[in-house]
Length: 410
Image 1: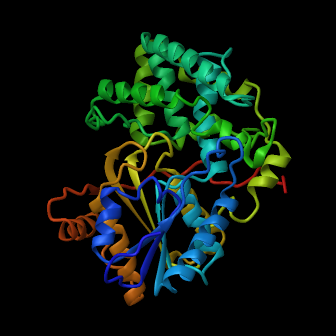
Image 2: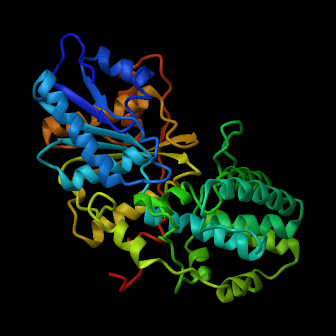
């Protein structure tokens, strides 16, 4: 916990504050007169993950802050990745404790792991049926499979049909093509560059085959054996392909044509491939408040996301929008903004600063200020004149798998 000289009454609380306490954004907020607090990731998180417990710990931090420094005039729950998901949970559960939320590259484990599983299912069925993508008993197995998957994907990339199948998996899984920080975003019209970018992304994803934090999610709550939270029973992968990014769909069709292989044959293989079933205990665990969200924010929420996030694809933001629509959430409380950068939660200090000031304006006036890319970038440059913010006009493809659980499972 830190309060600056001349504290203005605002507290920014963050799951990852300890590791980011001396970051550029933290130092900027302190200089601006904002207090900061939060936690660090639990060292046992890989074996005992529970976002509901993280939220309770963050509430305890706010309590301790109030005891030491007095009650803040406002509290913003800020977070990236898992911290962003915790922030979304705060927005639905604790309107009496905080005033607003900034959720950066927020995951949501069931929709995210289904999205990741769809792509890995295609890769397994068409490239390496012998390699594991779920049900990991230990981290050593994850490391071994990562090595073997990288080898299999590298070999596939050397053949026309292998390149086509990598692109098919990326399209069905709705993974972003561009995620490499060492390469520029590919021109969508340059099919060769687009496919090479996809290969870079799938190799990055192979570091955790089955999806970001698959092991952590399957062992959440301290389960000694993996509990499967993903499923694809009843999923039509032909339909998911057609729902993919139109640019990626065209790329896949072109690559299959160049390879001299009928795309429908591979889609038929996917139709007949053995499906995976969710474990009812896993779905029950992830359905508890604090471990899922329903699109029912009780306070203003600004969600920010990098468009080249291979770990939590930006399409996950649309899953939340679909829940707002389905559950009649207050859409006027929600806004999103996207940053033209590869990688997971790679926001600059200016982009984070602009997000907080945007939210504060909404709290002050009851109306959202300009959240267009121009509005966000202008705000960021005004706050940190030396910055080069990269908010961009971006509309994610409609998420194919927004569901919290299989139909009829609860």
